[in-house]
Length: 317
Image (cartoon, rainbow, N blue to C red):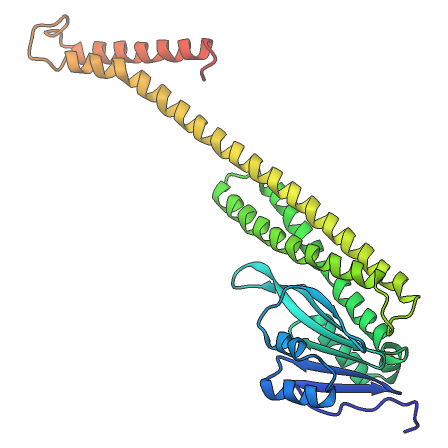
């Protein structure tokens, strides 16, 4: 191949390398201590604390500036089907003039898909790595941020489905769906909000490896994050209103049941009294009449109908 042609993959997972011209993308998936040691050998100027951070299970989002590179820790949502909630999946970046190093757990589709495209096609490799490490970092970051939009799109679909099912009789299922979705939206909001200060700092930072025109690129990503934040906030407000509506409907249904039970209890009181009186072993009117049972039953029915009429006239039924 000529000097301008990118090379094929050099090493296998969990450490994979792609090159185009003088720019390198080194991708580490769940690196071991030995992988981190080899990374340090290859880039000895990486600070030991940054190397320690990429081995940590979860780090808070941050950006560290070194003389020759930038180190970033960022989080992106990953669906946890077992817990039925979106959880933060960490991606660490080392960004230099002619390289970008990504460290992640291998489950984020934008990163895995981008690497596979660059492996399969020279044009994709040239497009990603042809303008240096900072631009490659921007491209990967932009794809990771844009991937949140379809995630929030699914959330909006679930919110709409809950709105349609809100007035159905299966209140227990609806309340459970509301609780799960609200927890998911809270998690998404937390993840999205934590990335905004990082990108805003990238937009304003004056670092030797970043060209002046990169400010507009990072500003575009910041705009996307603000839009994502607004969508998540709107969904949170809607699901909260649905939760309040579900609570009101549940209370209304309980009140309706209690009202019917109260009406039945009140109607039964005089009927119980009449039957109790005629159950006494004393002389009572119509006691010797052969039609005493029929007369007593008619009286009880008339009393019940009279009470129902009174309830109806008072709009209690």
